[in-house]
Image (cartoon, rainbow, N blue to C red):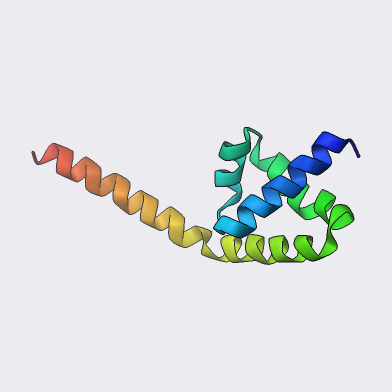
Length: 88
C-alpha cells in the first residue's frame, strides 16, 4: 500500500473517531469520495491498525443505524424552510 494512502486512512479514521462524524463529513474534509473513505476505513485500516479499525467499524455501524433519522430531519427542515419562505 502506498504511504500516502496509508497516511490518509489513518488520518480519516482519527478524524472520524474524534468527532464521531459521518463518512460524508470526512469525505468533504479530506477532499475524497465517500467510497474512498469507506474503503479506507473498512478495508485498509484493518491492515494498518486493527484496533483503530474496530472503533471505526463501530462508528460506521452507529451512523448506519441513525442515517434514516438524519435523512428524515433534513427533509423536515427542507420543507419547513420552503413553507416559511412561501408564507412570508
